[in-house]
Image 1 (tube, rainbow, N blue to C red):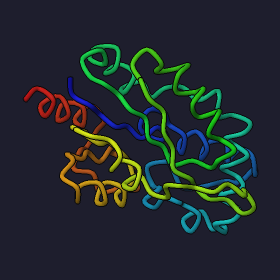
Image 2: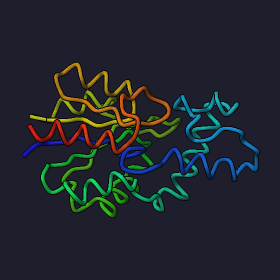
Image 3: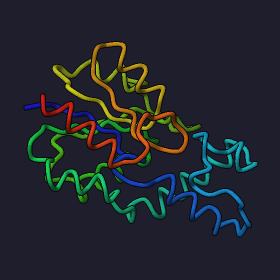
Image 4: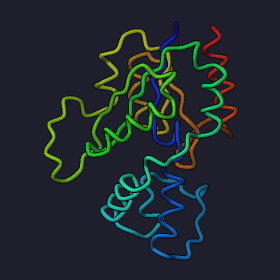
Amino acid sequence: MKIIVWDIDDVLNDLTKEWFTSFSLDINITCSLKFEDLKENPPHNLLGITEEFYIKSLDKFRKEQGHKLKPLMETLSWFERKGDRYFHIALTATPFFYVPLSAEWLFNNYGKWFNSFNFVPSKREGDGYRYRFSTKLSLIKLFRNIDAFIDDNESNIEDVSTIGVKTFLFPRPWNKSQYSSVNEFFEDLDRFLAY
């Protein structure tokens, strides 16, 4: 059985899109940018805010709305059709305070397919937690026989590709994914998994 490692935020759900919509409403600004215009992640420079303000806003959204995030429709549809064929591992980068909520969200929405939840820290000031693994690559090296790694972060994709794991860059406005749509992404993933 093939083993797939999945990022959670912005692959299994629409965290950044939902945050962006909430952010625009929350601070009551008229923002000319659309989600598709977020060519950087984090997007604080595009929005004319500090990185600290962005992180606080995102963390507030996670605390207040994270449990309400809907699964990404195309991803959930793929799991409903083909998820039972593979062994799935979640590997997310998230602040320590959100780890229990992220795991709960995963198992509430994709629990019938995922066998494992793992995280590396998105460090926050004063969290006081001692992390054994600081990057996705450092943690993924513990797993054996990983067939595919899926993430929306180009840096994570580049790191993991150095150890011979087949990587797939999930299409988002802030990355240079080769796929023009999520459906095209899943078509390519299916071709790879068929071999």
